[in-house]
Image (cartoon, rainbow, N blue to C red; front, side, top):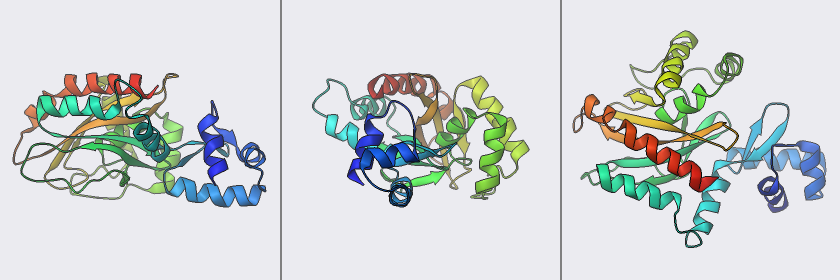
Length: 238
């Protein structure tokens, strides 16, 4: 399993199962079984065509290991944003058909969100997930919805492909996504996408707020700050 992780980390692009098995010196059935575990835990991501790439958990561990070896880390960038706005900040990356939180900086409020690093969340009902979905074409989006469905998390959750597609068109136009109590009651999140150097959307930076403390207009006023932070995270993670 460690040899598979090493192969994934060194690969410049997603690899075929046969190539990973050969690189790790294991049989294809063994590699397939181990990769199933790695995908489930966020260490690997399954791509179309039977290929596999490095997952958000591994990226998060790599960021932690690199802490102290860089002048700027993802954590440092997020702390700067938290100190400016006082709210809870997350970075989430796609892991299969969900997103997983790789970083979290608590806000200054006298309450805490239940989210934690390593926690997985749906794509369709979260601001981070919407940023990821906005990077898919219509075919890939339809295939994902067919696989996962659109679970109703709250009364505000978008549960049809048409409604979600319209929302994602807005995300692409605006450059940010909003979860307006769609994943949890009384929780509103705004996120800006994080891209790889080749332009793929792999996750997002989000600010999480509660509706009875900060209003919708106040959250939207944070858009530029969140976008700027997402760009800085991209440069650190590149």
